[in-house]
Structure formats: C-alpha cells, structure tokens
Image (cartoon, one colour):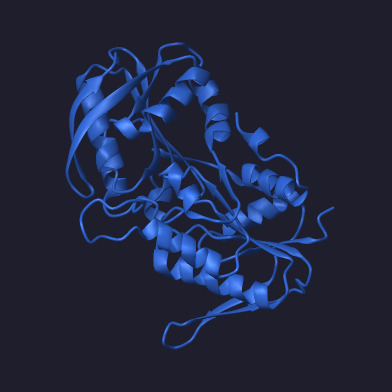
Length: 314
C-alpha cells in the first residue's frame, strides 16, 4: 500500500520508529549509522530511495547536538540519493525554549535549528506539542503541528470518569492547553502562579482556582528537571487537593527529575514515548508511558496521500 514510502530512524528513538512502521505495516528503512574515531557521524542509506517519499523519525532530545547532526547528515544522504521528498518527523523539537530573545545579546536558537533543517534539504516538518507554537513560523516549508491530546484523553476519560476533576496549568502560558483538556473532560481549570528566580528553578506562589477535595491533573508540554511540576504538586497538596496526577507529552527528565517525582505527592505521571526513557525513569513506578506511534503513523499516511492532517485533532 505504501510502496513509495520509506521511513528511516536515527539513534534517538528507534523503538518509536519501529512502532510507527508496525502501524503502517511496512519495514523500517535500512541505514547504517557509524562514527569515526574523532566522533564524526557517517551514514549510509541501505535502500534505493530514488523517487521515494522518505521520512526520518528523530526527536532532537539529549544528546541534543548529536541527534540534530545525525538528522542533518541523514537528510543530506537522502537528498543526494535522489529521494522524491524528505520529511523530518520530530516528535520532540529540541531548543524550542529558545524561541525569543530573553536578554540582550542572546540567540534565538529555535530559529537557527529551523534554518539548519531547511538548508539540509528537508521539505516538510512534522512535530508534536511544541513548547512555543510560533516556532512553526520560523520555517518557510510546510509544518504539521500534531497534539498528544487524543492519546491522553483516551486514558484520562477512563481514569477520571467523575466531574470532580481539575486540570491545572503550572504557569500562565499553559492556560489555553489546560482549558482544552478541561472542556473535553468536563472539568474545571486552575492556574499555579509562580515566580522563576533563574533558569530551571521555580518558586510556587499560590493557586488560582478551586482545588480543595478535587482530583487535580497538572498538565504541561514537557517535564525537564521536574522542579515546576513538584512545586506545583506541593502547592496543590497544601491547598487541599484530594488526588494529584500529572500529564506531559515530552519526558525530558534531566538531572534529579525522577528522584523529585518519586518524593513528591504526585500519584501518577503520564507521559508519551516521544522521547525514550532512561533506565531510572523506566523503573519509577509513578511514571506511565502512552504511545503516540499511531497518531504519527496516521499523519504520515495522510501526508503521503495528500489528505487532511487537521482532522486528526480532537
């Protein structure tokens, strides 16, 4: 059915690429990825891709720079092998938090990454739950922005069938996302008012909204050091929340994140497999992983068949 489609994967999250191929009932494309003694990346495509629509599944997660370079080198290899088109499927878009100048003489690295991807010959980008939606405007090529909302809703509707659910945004920037979830779960929303003293350190001030005696779901696009999440959970507990859960699309989980989650009052953290979990995170009983492979596979099918991708949104 998809003879003119070939999906390749870098080293960042090969299990997700395998699952996408399984959903589409096609094999993963063969590619040899190696490194020279000085750590330079070398890639050889093991398929005839002349005139074929190709897709590279590669979240630009840690090690971020290695994974970005791997993606660029593979795109160049496909371009020189005369692929009909090259689509980069980035379940997680690295450097997304550097989407604007926050101080004088600082870079906008999210835009730099967009320029690099375009210069490498990539024709289209597919990504999921961007940290900042305006990143789509950094590209002069088509950009499909997908959401993990359908995957989370299927799980949350069975987990929270009552109407005592409160969707909590950990900051003002996530209110729109929280409202979208609360509407579909028929719950209310609350906002955590916080003050950030420096990067990766946050201080919770107070809760805006009624959470006492409620089941609270803290919703964010990613969990990095888990400082914001755990501080929000502590504030919710002090405000009288009955149960505290968390949902985040991208489990970055750097530094002491897993230890913080384990020690926090959060009962369960639901994430997706846009980023592969470290061993420490896999062993944490509080972390549950949902798969977004079917959503990404359906997006690839629709792009290939020139069908609407927007109808995937709930």
